[in-house]
Amino acid sequence: MIEDYTEKMSNELMHLNKDDQVYMKKMVAYIGAKAYFYDDEALGEQLYNMVCDLKVAEKEGIRAVDYFGKDPRAMVDQVLAELPRRSLGSYAGLVFILGVILVGMRYLMDFTWMMPLKIQPLTYVVFLLNFLVFSQFIMWLWSKQSYGEMKWSWAIFISVISLTVFLNIVRLFSIYFGYIGSLFLSDGWAISLAVLVLLGFAVMAYRSRDRLMTSLLVLGLTFLVTGCCVRFVNPGTANGLRWLLPLIGLVLFLLVFRLQRKGKAI
Image (cartoon, rainbow, N blue to C red; front, top):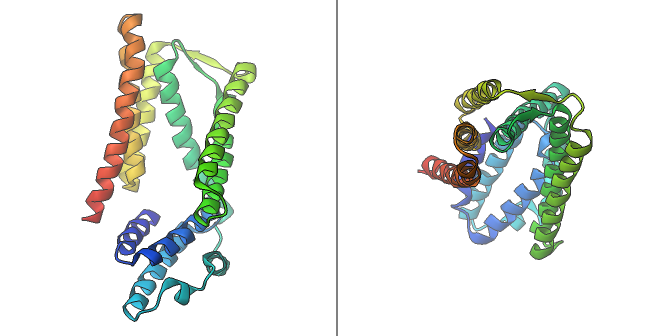
């Protein structure tokens, strides 16, 4: 699995000297903007092997810039040209999985904040499409920053502006077109669907063994608990819970993600 190669590569990177770590991180950042288009397994294995080869070269006094060349991007383009591209079916499967996760998480957030709950299918579709474009742009942007082609402050500023645009596109679409095909759910149906979404997350986390998916499961559980609680307490308490519990969930998300990474590194 790509996650296994990523973890092993991260562990091997720690054994390289500082300059070589910077070189390899630039290479990985550049690959990140193109990773969607190539086979995960082959790409992960190739990156891991390159780090291992560099580790051996270091013992002979050879630096990354001498081993791979002065321009990491040229090296990456050469490597990618030899890798199999992701098939149409694989790419469609990836988009589908991302869609299930994003739409599921968006539903749980709506379940927390919206009473009565209104499902807006078109808004979910726009949310997914915007996220795909936004994520690709952000990866491209930060790959530029990692090569010194853009100042860190500018990268942060553009990222914030882009996120604002992304959120407002979804919000405005929801306001003006979200009513098309929308459906109101009673509390009973809303809770049942939220439980099913979380069970789906649990199955995906169990099968993938991915720390990000496990962390999202914890965050989703927080949204589920919050959404259930606010439906059975007075409005004043509900407003407080809507802010407090998701904040706790975000902290738990980051904590679980961090602890799992440390656990795999041991």
